[in-house]
Amino acid sequence: MSALPAKPGLRHSVLDWSSNNYQLSAVAQHGRHVSSSLRQEGRSLRNETNCTTTWEEGDTSRRLSDRIWDVSRWKETLESCAQKLDVEMEALTLSKAQTEQALAAAAVPLEVSTECLSLRDGRRGLELVADPVDEELKKEAELIERVQQTLQQHIDQAFEQLCILQEVRHQLTADLQNKMEALDIDMLCLSLTNESPQISLKTNPTRIPSGSTTPEEWLQFSQFNVARAEEAMQVSQQMREDTSLSRAQLQNELDAQHRATAFALRKRNHHEAQARDELQWQLRNTEAEISEMDCDIQRLDADLQAKTDSLKLAHTRLENRTGRPGMDLCRDEVQLGLVGEVQQLEASIAALRLKLSEAQLALQKMSLHHARMSEDLSRKQEALFLEQRTMNTRARLTPAPPGDKNLVPLVPLMNSSGRRNLQLLTQ
Image (tube, rainbow, N blue to C red; front, side, top):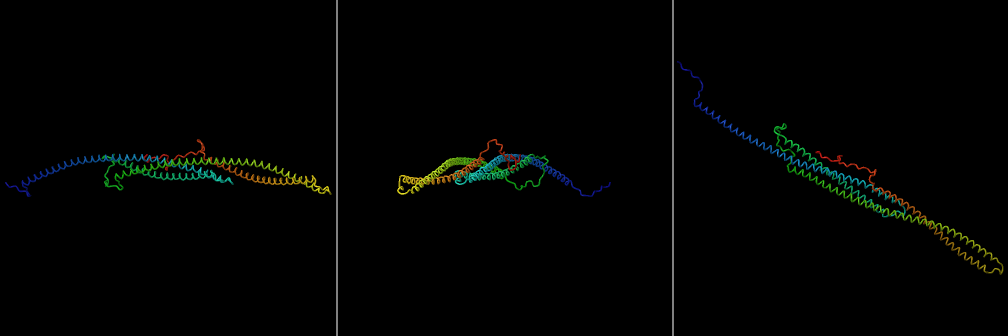
């Protein structure tokens, strides 16, 4: 029998084989141990991360809910403040319009006072006096000008305050709009879940956006806007009260001055009417006296002519008797009587001439005074006519009765945007 041939190659020993088997078992056992540890740690990590994630998501949702509640509360506060601000703006606009109407209405009394002063400047002579009516009219014109200046100041202040309110309203609207957008974003974030299709990974989501503010700054900003709006509304309310009180006081002063001017005008008109009536009575009596004086002058002149004729007769008799001859040219009773008659006639003629001269002078003075009184009566009648025109002019100040069809209807008040009611941008 022949021997088997030996196969070439390295042969391992049983010890190597046993060692390899042990090593394989040990490595497998160690791998299983490590894998089991890793699996336990993975399960623990999964549970821990799941709990942490669930807690963080819940906490974030709670914080979102709290934030939504805070923003909603400030949104309601801003809306309420904006509505109050709109009401105050309408009230201030109405007050400004009423003040403008009062200012426009003051133009008519000023025009009337100026026209009355111009009318009364048309008086002539001694009728152009600085009477109480002139004084009251000038006081009235000065008062109206002061009223116009005061009302214009209130209008200017109201306009400036309206601009401030409009600016505050714009700031409130911007803040309100921002909070509405923030609410929409936060509510969208609150509604998102892991199954939402809108979720995705973002680039550097933990960055701090530019322009970010702290919660304290956010709160202070809204508080400042509300406080500024309340302060502006308080100033506006005080301004409306001051304007209303000022309008009432000025109207009372104007009414009192109108009554004082009207009383002075009626009193002056009464005095002028009395003076005119007195002057007319004096004129009638003077005319009657002139007529009687003219008749008496004619009688005096006739008597003077008669006395002159009688004197001529006496002179002629005396002259004729001087022609008696001889002893017949004696100073008898006829001669003495004729001399006495001549003396008496000459004295009568002298007295009549003196009286005639006095009468003519008195007639001339009365005629001149009659002319002066006639001219003065003409001026008084003209002054009375001007006073009547003045009273008729001041009748324009009498308020129109209710229901007058000639009254112009008031235009509904509107704000700067043309709407009658200011609406919030959120509505």
